[in-house]
Length: 224
Image 1 (cartoon, rainbow, N blue to C red):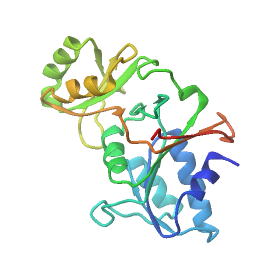
Image 2: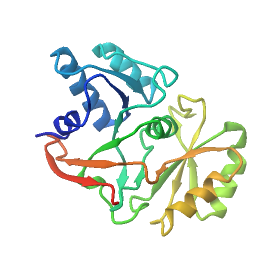
Image 3: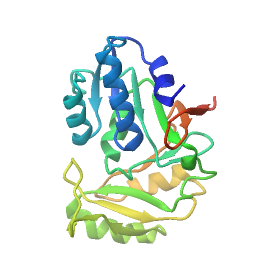
Image 4: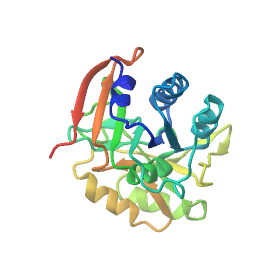
């Protein structure tokens, strides 16, 4: 069984589904389209990025907005780090704010990762994306440095990268985070910060798969 097949077992027929961004989420979107085409499932999907939306349209997946589906049955996405309590760091794929909005709108949040994304403590991989207003970029850089981060603006093709929301991202070099809740609150208190890549208490289930085949090798549930 793959992580996708396990995820399908958790999706009720006719569900409103949040579709994530990134490698694992893209693979899931393609698998979902094949399942829909085979008539084995009916859903409508809310995408977390323009890229995911474009892929879903190409594959024939019916889309909805959060206005049309304000409470989603389930969201399926990837992650860049997963702590033992299922807290996450996300955003390496640059869609962190929309991913967080979709996750917060969902009754269940299913995360698909490979074992390499499992970490003993958030921050182990050394990077935390933070989306900020472009106008506030100098202030946010200064305040983030005051918090012990080393923020670097994300650049693509020699230009400042802007998200689907029209905002830049600061990739913060960090050390393992002893108190993610306090750290997240401190960052979000900076005027101009739109959102952080810390997804705390949001994942309900993590499905761990092999890197190339996505064969399911472990399933973790949020501690109660």
